[in-house]
Structures are given as structure tokens and as C-alpha cells.
Length: 389
View 1 (cartoon, rainbow, N blue to C red):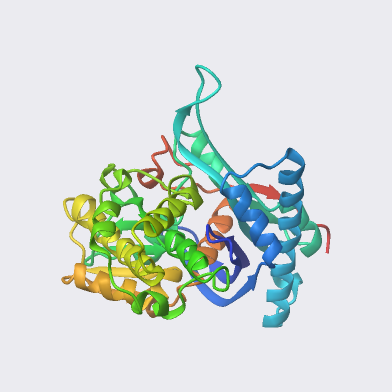
View 2: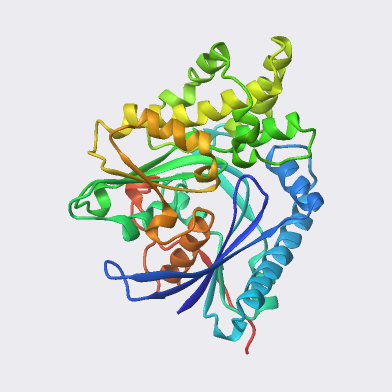
């Protein structure tokens, strides 16, 4: 099958579309990335997404409108990608769309009196994607895992296990998106041996500070140019490293609820109070991302697994300061990018949702309970039929 996977992450910078050729079934599933394309959101769309994700006031009408608008945006991205690749939509068997997360609380909390509940919300109406492309679409993956007692995240470890398991080499797949997360795959691992968790902020805090520093002229620190022009503020870094989330034991997940706009504003205020240079603030946040990942290895990974290789994906893999700090902090581990294993760093998550959709299409479980905490394997994803072609 030729399957499109689509993903918009916590940075909400746009939609990644991956074209995958997939056949077989686990443990002999064969999946190859054929092509990748990125479509950026227009500024007003991104602003609406971030306002909603950061918990700013929105009416039910606002949420409904954005859900359908993003459905249109995802459909356009799929069509644009296929045109660029000169692949007719009629050749696409299936689309897997993660959508856009605007809220995720994977752990049970007390709400509405005595009720305790966890919840998640991804928007980007899949019926619009199916209608406009004519392709069967599978979306809304996380709720099925949460219904089975899981945290609905992380989901990519299921794919990491299929791609990177080795009988002799212990590997960790690290994705540095808005949030940084790891999948630990010990040598000769069985599914139950794999564990995964969010280490803390990835690019989310850095990006917010860059937007503040540049007054909105830049969304991220390309090539770590701003960070490399600054100096690390040790008192700030020491406070950041005392962040309670870092010491919390896995399984655990994080998002904008922990490290979003309010968290960034806290450190912007700290910088103003201490008259810190904006470039120094950005550098310190960048170093914090690296050291928080390394800290997670020392606390939670090394005690449970021997690691030979670290495979890095996500936007953070293109940040030279983050990668240099990781190499310095984890000197005994070979660090490679996912591109060296056949998947460009920016395509990894979209590619993963193509595989998750493929498995759902065949009615096979596609979560990894050892990673999410679910009580049992489930088939994640809701299916919408495309129109007859």
C-alpha cells in the first residue's frame, strides 16, 4: 500500500506529509519512506492554533471553526504533496492523520466534583480530508489508548520498535519536537521490554523565547545562531534543572500544559528582572533542553538498559548546539540522525502515522502498552471513508 502520513506538532508551524510504501505485518512489516513534503501554516492559522493550545479564551464556535479549517488545511497539504511528487491521489490507498493537538492531559485528574478523568483533543476534521482527497482516512489515534487506561502518548514508540529493534544493539530513539521524548529499545527487546516517555521541553521553550527576542520576526533559532551569540546564565540554568517534571518517574507525558506560553512568560519575566540579554536567555534554554534529556538518561534510562546508539529526529536534530551538548553529556553513546537510518529528521513522525494507520486499517493493535501505560493492546484510530473514485 501507498500510505500518506500527516502530522502537525506542538510548534504548530505547519503540516508534514510523508509518503510511505508499506507491506507485510509485524514482526515482518516492511515500510519505506518514498517522499516528504512540508506545508507551512499561514500566520493567522498558526496564531489561532497556538491561542487555543495555550488555553486562551475560545468559544465552542471558535473550536468548531478551527477543527473544520484545519481539516481543509490537511486536505490541501495532502493534495499539494501528491502534486509535487507527481503521484495521483488515485494511487494512494490510505491517509493517516494525527491532526493538531490542542489539549492533552494523559494523567487522570479530578474534574467536575468527584469525577476523575484524563482527556485529549486533536482537531483537523478527517471527514473533510477524506471528502476532498477521495481517500479513506484514519485519524484521532490517542483516545483508544486512553480508554484502555493509557496516557495516549507517546505513540511513535510502536513504530520505533518496528524500525530499530536489533538483536545485539541497544538503541534509543529521541525525537526533539516541541516536546522531547525517548523510546528505549534494549538489545533483543520484546514489545514489553520497550519503554518510552517525554523528557521535558524540546524546541517549545526555545521557540517561544526566540519569538519574544525577535519580536515575532523569527519562529525558531535557525542554526542556533541566536543561542551561539549568547552566554549561558548559570543561575537560570540551575533553576530550570530543578523543574519538578524532570524528577517525576516515567511513564509520563508533557505538553503545552506544562511547558507552553505560561512557562515561557515565567522565564521572560525572570530575564527582565535580572536584566539578562535576550541571546543569553535563548542560549540557556537551549542548553536546558539538552541537559534535561541527558538528565533523563541518567535517572531513568541507564539504570534499566544498556544503550549503544541514540537515533535523533525532529527539528531539534538540526540545532547544532543541542546536538553538541548531547554529544558532550552522553560521550559513550554513538549519536546519529534518523536521516542516517533512512528517514529525514523532519519526516519521522508523519512517517510513523502512516504506519499506525496501515496497522489500524488491518485491524491490528498499534499501541505499545509498555510505553503508554494502557492495560492492553488496542487498535487506535477512527476510520472515515473517502468518496468512490
